[in-house]
Structures are given as C-alpha cells and as structure tokens.
Image (cartoon, rainbow, N blue to C red; front, side, top):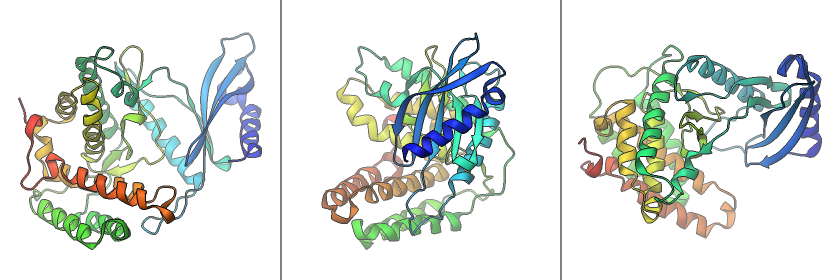
Length: 346
C-alpha cells in the first residue's frame, strides 16, 4: 500500500469524524502503521473538542495474489462482510462477562478499509511464549474456558444456513492437495484423501448444519484483556462452516506450539483439554467431524507454507512444508488408529 492510499483513507475518515466518532470529534491522527502481507493497519488517535482522546484501528485490505485453488475476493466485499460479522458479534456479546468484542466504528468499502475500536490487552500467542514463572497454566486454562464460551456465543449469533457436504469438503481438500503435489508428491495426496474417506465413513447420519465461523481462529487473533476477558479479532475470513471448524483450528495451533511451550515450562495439554470441555466436551477430539476439520486445517496450513514468499527458488520452503506435513499428520487425532493420550477425558 502506498502513502497516497493511506492518506486518502484518513482524509475520508476525518471528513466523516463527527458522524463516525461523535459530534465532538475534530481530528484524526495516525500514530503507527503496521504493514502486513494482506493488509495495512493504522493505529489512529481521535481528538475530541474538550473530550477524552480515543484510539482505533484502520485496516486497509490489499488485493491478494491469485491462487489456482480459491476464488479471488474483492477487497470491498471483504470489508462489507467483516463489518457485518463484527457488528453481529458485538451485539451477541453485549452484557456477557469475560467476552469482549471490539466495537465496529466505520465501513469504507470504497477505500477497502474498516475501522474498529482499539482494545487493550495481550495477544494469546504472546502469553504462550512466556515462561512458566510469569504465566501459570491455570491462567491459560481460564482463558481457554472463555474461548470456548466465545465460540458458543458466536455460533449462536446467526441462524444456521444450509448443511455441510462431505463431497464438497473432499473436493476443497483435493484442490489444495493437487497444488501441493509439487512439494509433497502424489503419495501425500493419496494418503490424505484415504484418511479423509476413512474418517468420513465414521460420520453419523444426521446432517451437520453450517453455523457462523471465524475461519482463522488462532492464538494471534485472540486478545486477552487485563481483566482476563477474551476478544477475537480480524473477521476478514468470517463465513459459515461446521461447529468444529474453529475449535479444531485453534487446537491445531496449540498442538504445534506444544514443543516450544514445553521448553518454557508450560504444558498445553490441559489447555487443549479445557478448550474442548468448555466448547463441547473433551471427547470431541474423537468425533469424526472434528478430525475431518483438523485434516482440512493441516492441508490448508501446509499449502500456505508452500505458497509463501520465495516459492520459485524455495528448496528450503519445500523442505519446511514436508517437515510440517509429517508433524501435523502425526497429531493424535489423525493417527491410525486414533491415539488420544493426555487429551483423554479425566
């Protein structure tokens, strides 16, 4: 993103500031700019005429590079959808202790930008990087309990829309696996599809409704407020999916963080167990749909690694993708037969 685009967004926002921030709003000033692969985030100071200054974030979307396995989305459409999801969540969490939602402030689809309230807190992934002497496991378990409650609240923020299709999920997976064959080989594709078919054969016959999902629930998108509350950020990928989509995605990221956490004296197995118990039950890890969602996240995660910067000359990138593929497929929930170890219900 160039400076002219950022300036245009801030000029448009300042022109609307009395309507957006209140009648006493007079000026908008950029404080910091964070350039990310798919967006630029600007922290702004909102100055009021005689009032208390406030802070907000402006996120300006970039056009994502075309991928052969997914349809492109216009940034203006992403803005509209994220703003609607943020509005819906903010209303659903009103009055819920410990569950926080950033207030949606403005949608500027013509500038591919969205404005939301700044929340004070610490990203969950930063807490996972601290040593045991500074962060105790019970604190992380309390956070996991609130994340489970957040998931239940968000999934209930709108009516179910349609039902999940195993055939469509398999085709979605195969589109990415075919793309991955240049890094992992055809044998990896066959192994993953065989695992999908084996797990899918265990599904109960009842249809699975599609509910609101965040679709990128990971420790970096979870904010822990000073009072221990939980907020989830970045709804750019919000859509509908299965009830186990988000919880299995976060489970995968916690599983990948376990080795690093163990070296810092943190045990994440109780955190994973608490998360599943707060959302559903510890035995949810055995459910075929949970395991299918986990397999899907593994494929998508490795696809993102393989499509990272430098793919053209990426021997190291291919090596990383193959290593991460082996690590992910060794997760207890994807083992053959399933092995659940420390996540077995107490």
